[in-house]
Amino acid sequence: MSTAEPQPRPFAPTRDRGRRTRALLLEQAATLFGEHGFESVSVAGIATAARAHPNQVTYYFGSKDALFVHAAFLLLLRDAERLEPVGRRQRTPDAFRRAMARTALALPAVPIAIQAMSITRQRPELRPVAEQNLALLFHRAQRYLTAILELHDWVIDRPADVETRTFWSAVLGARLISESGFGDRSNDIDLAGVLTIRRRSTAYGPERDRH
Image (tube, rainbow, N blue to C red; front, side):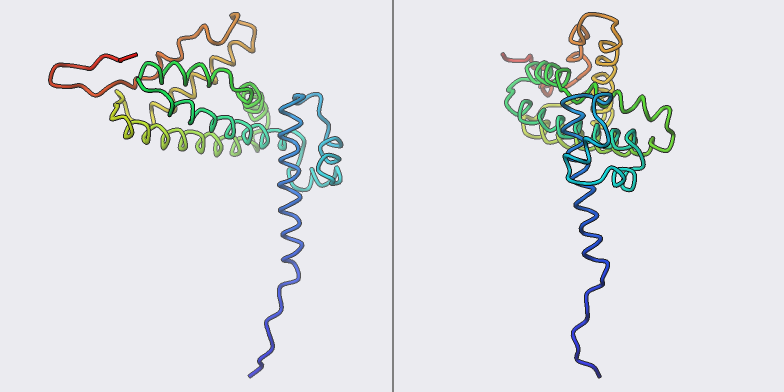
C-alpha cells in the first residue's frame, strides 16, 4: 500500500482566488454604487478599484445590472444592522417604534435597493437575487424583533414574520413614493404606526408607555 501523502487538487488555489476576486468586486461595487449611484459608476471603474479586469465582472456576475443588484442588497442588509443598536437603546414601545421608523427611513441603502428591485422587474433572471435577499432581510428582522420582545416582555398584535414584513414593505414603499417626487418627505408617512409593538396587558388592562 502506498504511503504517499495525498496531493491537493490543482484547482483549489484557483477556486480560492476566484472567490476572493468575486468578493472584492462586490465590495468595491457596493462602495462605488453607494457613493456615486448606478449611472455614474462604470464596470471599468469597479474593476480598477478591485484590481481586476473588466471582463471578470462579466465572468462572475454577468453584467453591470447584476452586480448592482447584488451590491444594492449587500448595502441594504448592512444598513439594516444599524437599526439593531438603535432599537436596543429604547426603553418603551413608543420610543422603539419612533426610533425604528426614523432610522429606517433615513438609511441610505433603501433607495439603492428600490432601484435594484426596479431593475429586476426588467431582468427576470435577477429576480431570485432580490427574492433571496429580501427573505434574508425579513428573517433577520424577525429574529431581532423576537429578541427585543423577549428582552422587554413586550408583545405585538400579529405574528412576528408579518410584523417585520409589513414594516420593511412600508419602509420601501415610503421611500419609493418620496423618490418618485410625490410628497416632500418620506417621513411624512406614519411608519411608526405600522408597528404594533406594545407592553403586555396586565390584570388592569394594557399598560401605557412610560416615557
